[in-house]
Image 1 (cartoon, rainbow, N blue to C red):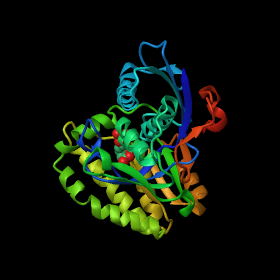
Image 2: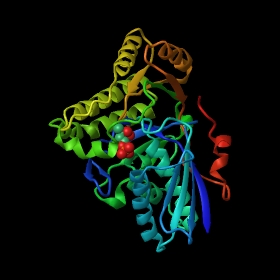
Image 3: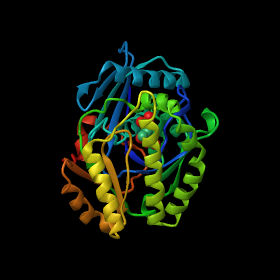
Image 4: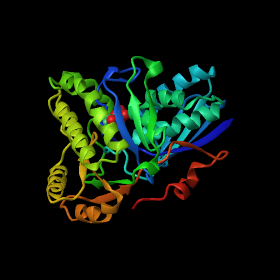
Length: 339
Ligand code: PMV
């Protein structure tokens, strides 16, 4: 039996990934840029065991649904092929934030799984190779491997589609105050959503403009230019949701409270507060602000009707291995509850 554990942060995309050129390989239609979210984390333990006759998956202490287990099994099949082994694994994963609601839980989960599974099976991969591997599990997971502010280079094929750090966490103390308006699981998963993206008449235009938006976002991060970051981030989020809404079937992730937060953020910005919003595949709103404004902004968000929780996170570190066979039952030690 061989065991290893790893920890990873989720990330929030400032320039979004939506739609693949190749669904099986998860080669994205366009590059993307994100920030890892410190304090939010997934810890995953992996044990390859010759006594197992199938892969087992536990999420937050409960046996996972069959579709979730199959997704992990498909991912591990790829890894087994790379490592030249036929051993099945027990995967035990815990996250300290709501999962499946647009806070990129699959990103931290597959990043931690990639690192732990490679260590457990004895595969020594470079950071780029690890990021490529994580991408196979969930596209955005490739961005949770490197540190801080991260760009996923779309690439043309498997070998050149991976993420790199463009600035360390200490480069810019931005805070993401996540306005949670619904803790329930979203109806349509992002994997299903990616497949419908091309049915929208707007997807081609969104993809065509992505390299210009990536350039603006990269520059805004490098120069710590918050006003430009907020403008490009909101435009990119609105473009992605326009594609979602106009796909067949149409996907509307917003709830009434989502719009209430968007409108409040726009009002605060007009009043001179440096704030901007971005929304992933779920109803919760990520409100980004420089750290010195984070407390009053979080307080204002709490006052909006329909907001059930506000979770605050700064720029996070890379995915990392935990010492020895760190048991996942000890996860609350490293990943305390956010309640
Ligand atoms: O990695 P996935 O398949 O969960 O897709 C993530 C999609 C968005 O969160 C909506 C955008 C992004 O770039 O993270």
